[in-house]
Length: 174
Image (cartoon, rainbow, N blue to C red):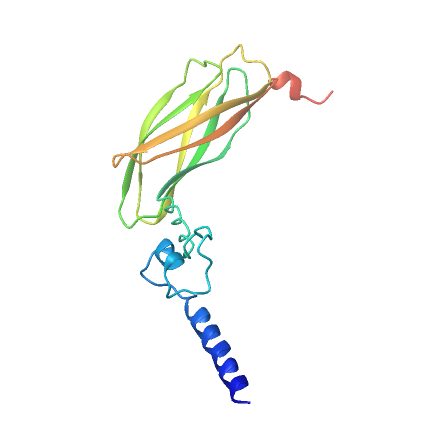
C-alpha cells in the first residue's frame, strides 16, 4: 500500500513539473529543451515558435480635412455657356484657401480655368464656374476635372461632366 502511495505521489509530482514548464519565461526554447529542469520535453524535439501576441491593427487613415465634389452642371447647346458647380469642404477649425484648376479632355478653348476659393472653418463653399461650349461641339457628355491644392499643400480632386445638347432646333417639338 505504501508503494502505491509513493508511486502515485511521484506521478503527481512529475505532472506538476510538466505543467509548470508551459509558462513563458526568459529562457530560450533551446535552453529549455536541453535542460534537465524540463523533463517533459524530448531532447531531440524541434524548436517551436515562441508564444506571441498578434500585432496591433494598423492605425485608421486620417479623416479628410479638405475635399471637393462635383455638384452638377447646366446642360448647354454648342455655342452656349454651361455653369458647373463644385462643393469644397473644410473639416478643420481654421480657414482654408485653395487654388483650383478646372480642365477637360476635349481641348475646349476656354479650359483650363484657374482661380482661388476660401473655405470657412468646419464648413463648405459652393463654387460656380462658367464654361463656354465651342460652336463645333457635337451633342454628348464631356468629362471635366477639378483639381485643388490648399496653401498648406493638401490636394483634392473630383470629376464631372457637361451635357451638350443638339441646340434649339433639336429640342423643339415636331
